[in-house]
Length: 214
Image 1 (spheres, rainbow, N blue to C red):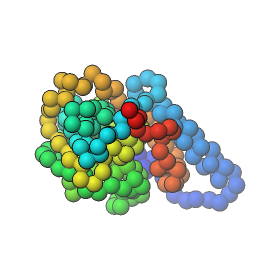
Image 2: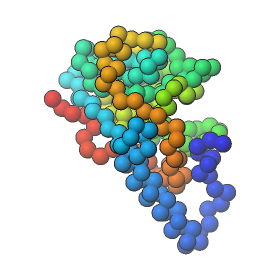
Image 3: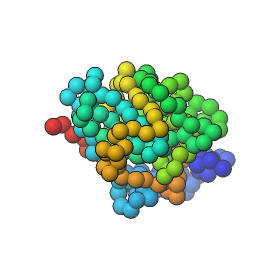
Image 4: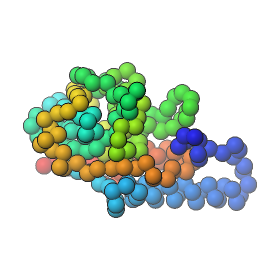
């Protein structure tokens, strides 16, 4: 059973008590995700990202062996975070790419799980993109690259259409910046309420400025 299906209901009764219960669940879900609880690393999860001086010089690098995502402006590191890449059988494609489609409010268009949110979508190859989603400690996706919401929102702000993307098994940045990457494992995190996932509130940015200017 998928994460989406676990929260699905067979009907939406208009009875007041059921409506109240659903509202409470949705509010609880917002509170949980806003505090970034249950990251699998203990405590809240936060990401530091720096605004580029020249957005045209931004370059994304993904190491599939470490699952680390590095966003750079020349030699300047703007952000380093853990992602979640494709599992064996459905690997994330390797090579040189460019971001060619961005959609902050993207949802899955096909079954199963039609409507499941894939927020902060940044497509770098046909049907492959960076987006928000639960991050595991080992490769677990169907080829896309998932990020924690705190990271996905900042990644979306850092890249633009045309931003180059390098995907390789390993990168020189692994030796230089891996110690800066906070590791995640969200496999045991509870699924948010369906009402919240299907609402526009799901796509609200994390609190505070996304990028630090310096």
